[in-house]
Length: 109
Length: 114
Image (cartoon, rainbow over all chains, first blue to last red; front, side, top):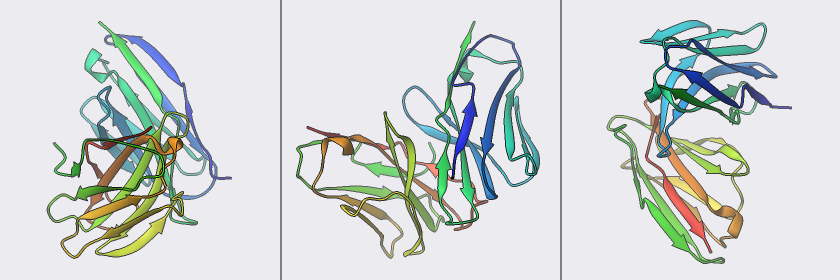
């Protein structure tokens, strides 16, 4: 069963807080992507991970292949980080992409 | 601006009709992906093309078809439209076909079927 589970579904944080969004998947993957979707609908790719950890500015993404789990961290959150964050995986079998249901983040000033 | 363009931005049509959505990838990108985002099903992968050839297929209905042309732009054809086809359709592009290439998303086409 090719499931991608994200938690939490909704998250409200105060500006400056450290935020963690989690993604779990069920079988072996060739890559995991973190996407950001703004209220206007546009989608931006934040990270592609196949192992380890990546950092870009205040964003950090990690993946644990053995535990089939990835986390997206936002340090010193800001209201402009308010968006939906979506985890997507590409499984070895079938070569398809599967998406989590997204985490809606609201950062309050 | 990702460099990926999609036309039209909005499309309103009736059930039973046929529409064509168009996508132009970033300059230099050979791979094009199509995705559907609906309120009830979230984001779903439809199909991927690489340099004109179908590379991977997802949950694409038989009423839907796609192709990538020699100039690398792609079209997604939706026919016998149903109310449930109302969704945002995104196109994305990447340099290569493999799973580890970053994808760049277009602004989407919002399809409303009435």
